[in-house]
Length: 188
Image (tube, rainbow, N blue to C red; front, side, top):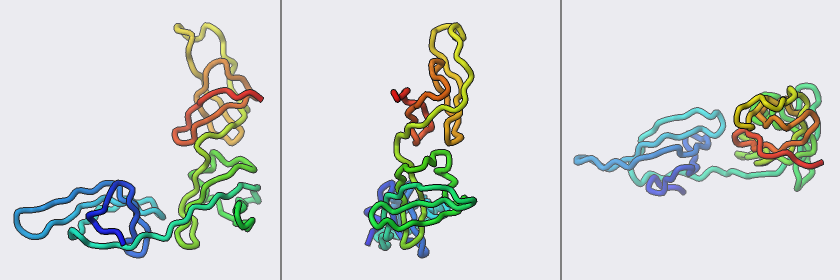
């Protein structure tokens, strides 16, 4: 059980039979009446933000959340097939479930799935991924006054990132999946 006095940013609770994550909170002790806690919570299934006020000391159940590593195998039309790395069980997800991670889907890569009961509520790619540049304009020396400069590059997954001028087509680059940023060119 989680009490309102235990709330921290990121605390997870069950509210109205759904998992929520506390985004922000403030304890209020008015001159008259009992203390209360104003919270902003994010529904972990729908992503909607909700503001609620609770009595101080109110208790909530902790959600039964499980993380599982799943390997992306292949795409079969509108279905995306993943395999659990522990049980080797395969699951199929439709396109709307993988929308957030689609720009990083690469066969044989391992993704972290967050489950609430038997439902997949989020999929996270690895923090860094090595992807091949499939299209980028040639970088011409002298394009910038200071010698730096960037150009757009389309990667094998369809993601477009800004890369330095020296990156060419068919180069492998490392990308930070948290903010879609180029990190470095990787030797083959």
